[in-house]
Each structure stands twice: as structure tokens, then as C-alpha cells.
View 1 (tube, one colour):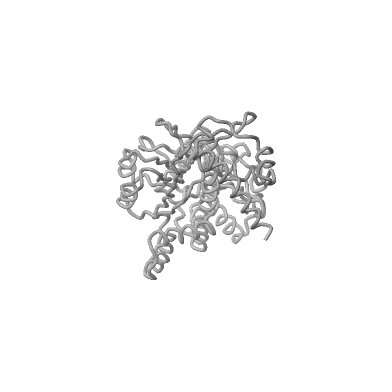
View 2 (tube, one colour; view 1 turned 90 degrees about the horizontal axis):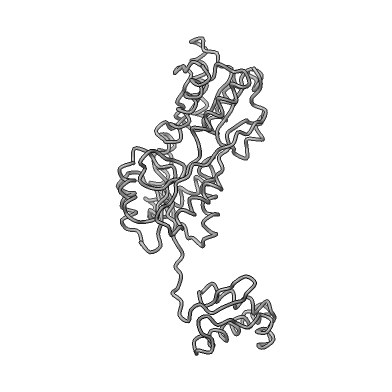
Length: 390
């Protein structure tokens, strides 16, 4: 009951100020009385007066200037429409994972749900399970809420779908974040970049991309990982990676190879392994790779796993072969999941600043300036116990 009375009081104050504005007693540029005086005049608490004023600020009638006061800025403000950020998730995630998600999505569609609901379902899958995508999407939404953004999740299995989303968008409010887009889609991405809509690519970039991008220095991060192992005395280093079609993986492979060349190490292609699988399949492929290297007389003393899930698979495979980490084999990963510190031993890895990436991407979308600067954000080497001197 008390809450209901408080609400009525706040509405009373709001209507009183609105009445003064609509009837010309307060004009654009006029300064309001202070909250305390309004509260005394209308016999309400100062908190109630503050709430009413805040509502009118939000609706565009009033504006506050710190240390100066509250002023009338409009007698008939245009209702602000919340920007809608369409987060586009790309279908080619990895062959096995793609099949699993596509199968689940098909069941979802067959049950009569819309494409938008399907995308939301896949997003929940990512948020709950994916080491990279979960933190990235959470960071995006947290950054967007500061700008009062609404969010929509879209899946694009084919380039034409991406172009259709952009063609049908509401030009007055919609914008797009392309999360980890594929370079094979570059023609479509260039075309949508000419649409005039705010679009940013997140966690991928290449030359002449056609849209602004925010990415981390995957190339530099891989060089950092190899350099760290070299500093510890390792000269025979194996590199495990997955999803070689993605821009980030290409950068990590190239960074590792270029650093090896800089250090005078041999780049042995038989020590570079594409592990294209998830969960138990990933572990099996890692074990097969280790066995294959052993059979060829390849004896790496350290492994760079170019992804957190790969590092987990490598750790499990090494344990199954009774290798001690780091005594028998040093291990460094890429991405710093909260779980990294709980591994035995805690994982040395390269950390990507997801919140900073998301904040910058949203900032580019909300910017009214035509020249929107792309940005590559530095990564950080986090040294724990899974690497040691040779």
C-alpha cells in the first residue's frame, strides 16, 4: 500500500511539471526549481521529486547540468527509439559442432519456432558451453545495455542470408555485430559495408574487409606464446590448432611460424596439427597426433595449443600417456577461461580482453562519426605452472 501511494505521489509531481511545460509556464531554456523546493511545494519527499524529474529527463523534456541545475529542453520531444543490435553468429563453426547445432536447430524449426527463436536457442547453447563465444556475447550485452540497446541474435549459414538481414533492417535503429565472420564471406561483407548501416566485425579481420572491425592481436599472441617457450629453453615445439578457415586461427598459425623463423627454429609442418573435433573426438585426435609424432621420431618438449578447449584436450591426452606437465612437456594455451586456474597444473595462456573488445565494438556502432576506426587490441601472456624451463 505504501509503495502504491509513493507511485501516485511521483506521478502527481511529474504531471505538475508537465502541465507547466505544456501550458507555457515553463519554456525551453527555463530552469526548474530545485528538488527540495518542488518537494516542499507539492508536499512530497525529495526522493519522490527526484524520481519524477529523472523520468522527464529520460523522456526528453528536461536535461540536467552537473552543478548548474535542471532545464527544459523540449515541449514535445520525439520519443527515443532504443537501438537494436543484431548479433550475427556464423554457421560454419567446425564440422562436428556445426552438425550438432544444425540438427538441434532443425528440430527447433520443425517444432514450429521462428528463425529468431532458433537463433536465441543457439545463443543459449553458446552462452552455456562455448569457451570463447559465451564470454564474448555476455560482454557485448553488458556493453550494449549502457546504451539502452535491445538485442537480437541471428544465425547465418550462407552469405545470402547475411545480405538479406541487412536489406530488411530498419535503417533508423538497427545495427549489426558480425561475430567471428569467415574470410570466405568477404564479398558479401564488402557489399553490406556499402549499405550505410552501422556494422562492425568482432574477433576477425583481414585486409580490405569493407566494415570496421575490433579484434585482438592473435598474430602477436601466438608469437608471444612461442617466445615464452623459447625463453624457457624449448626448441622442439608442436602447435595444435582448429578451425583453420577462420581469420584468428590463420593469424595464430602465421604468428607461431614467423616467431620460430625469427628465433632460428625449424618450422616442421609435421609438428603442426589441425585438430578438427570436439569433446572426446578432440581428445582422440590429439592422442593420435602425439602417437604419430612419436612414431616419426618427433619429440616436442612443449606444445602451443591455439585455443582453450584444445589445451584441455592436450592436457587430457598427455596425462593418458603418463606425461607430466610441465616436467615432461610444457603446455601453453590461448584464451583464459576462469577454469584455467583450476587445471592441474594451472594453465599458462594468452588472455584476450573480451570486455574491452565488446565495449569498443558497441562504441563504433553508436558513434555518429562517419570515420569509424578499427582497432586491434593487445593480448596478455598469463604465466602459471604448465610451462617450465627445459
